[in-house]
Image 1: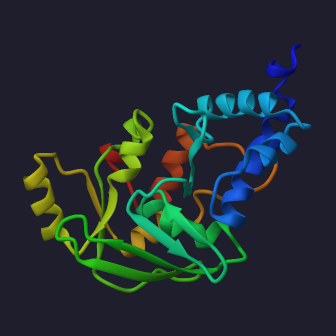
Image 2: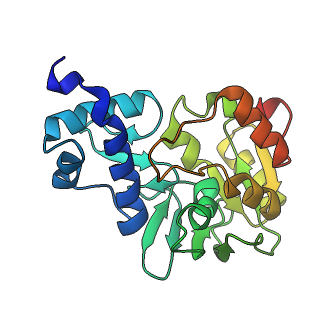
Length: 225
């Protein structure tokens, strides 16, 4: 087996990607990637492509890591500020997930704007209780199609002042209504979805396990199947 096709480094590269985001708010540098693959950047890049095929990361055309959920390397509507680190949150779901995943930052300030009216919004989100407030989250893309264009999907999981702002935005953009949830439901969805992702041995949920998780969070129906 050639070095480029040696999959034994894939998990080390995956963990290096996630820990760089968790600890520094950015994707790993080229030297950091190479270090994770026994000093070979070529091996690390091959690993990244396999990880992208397995939906662990999202790459752009230049082989750069754009997303490693719940982290993003590009702005998609949310900034997430802890005591020591600032992240781009990939979406409302991911922004709420960060304090659950990054145990060193159990409370974060999530800042965004209402997608409908543009009103700035800021929420303190922690790993203990859902934040108060009347904001709602609107998810445009159903679960079965979320990975068709994951950057588009995440860019359209946004917070709104209320359902009237959702309806106004949908009318303005000519799009069909997706799924609206309150902050408590969003918090439950985010709370355990990424458990273990920073550690070696993480495995993604299969569709049945994902459906069970959604149901436990109070999310059911065709949108989530």
